[in-house]
Image (cartoon, rainbow, N blue to C red; front, side, top):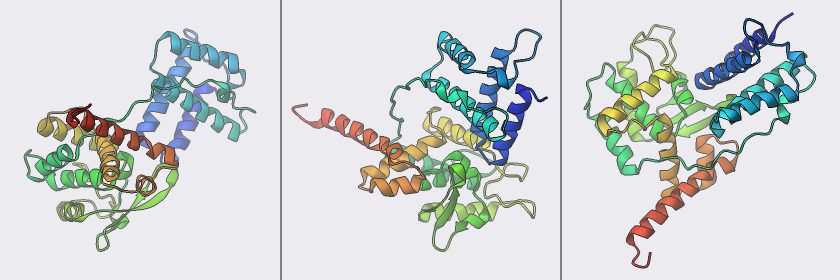
Length: 298
């Protein structure tokens, strides 16, 4: 009879088939293997999944609290466990998702750190000017232009295929979370960067990816993150800038210049408007900074 480890491996394999982002897959794998380790006595196997009840899960959750894990990390671990039990219920291994009864700790509300339009454009302009000697400068520039020009998630960026691009009309087909697709426009600078990337692209005959690694295969999200961090550190002196910084900048700068919130929601591929509304708080925060600095009565 399959044990907990076997079920976790089957669950992770199914997630991979569903094209879940590599980042999420790595996080869930680590969280669930830590869960198995917690349940495993020294030199023994963990209990069968049928024996895992709410009491066991609450003891595990209590251990997370004792270790003083951040609320965000605890929320992710609980989400991984709930997803695992949904999988087990769907496959008839257990009858109920006991992980649903776990109380999720409330995460502190933090606003994303957003580079200004000047900082963002300065960095991209330096990438375009070839300030760093890199083996694939055209590819690197296209990465930055699409991250900022389209507000893509890193998983969406590396998933772009040549067939997804409409260079004549400047539209990009984006595959987002949950296999949802959306159309996103891009501007003249992004278009020029994409054309430069395609012209310099050297790939095997059947490779469909726009962005390639040094071996001619599809660039991974980890590889793209490394590229962004390298340029941000070397050119902007800021290692905290990451691919999602450009997604935040895309939304915040559009909102600051008068774009409709629902239009931004569509461009970002957010399922709920409430997710997009956090950018209004960022804009209000920046507005208050300007007020406090400039108004004589502030």
